[in-house]
Length: 157
Image (tube, rainbow, N blue to C red; front, side, top):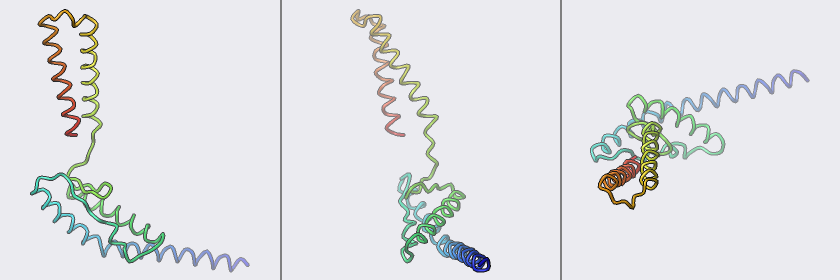
């Protein structure tokens, strides 16, 4: 009985090893094609002044099926991400971007700017904007311009 368990265990191990070798072989086949296509598309897109383009990685697993297809797709996707990073191209979702999108620091300053703008409006309300003094009108105009600039920055990303 123990021999059968050992044989079954060895068979599962061999199947898993063969599957991993198949995935690695598939990656070696399609990775140069994907990267060449992405680099050519990046050059064309950069000449047009765009910031990203769509790259279909899933179509390279069309001849496969089931969970094996998903394993191969994820392995190809990760290998493509790693390879494209060398060219400063970033595969996120189905799109390739020319620079990594890190919005935390700009958004932090924009939100801080928002809070200061709102505090300025509250200050004007508190001191009484109805006095119509030139200084309060000037501050009001500056705050409106700051709010407009903030929306413009948020829109541009």
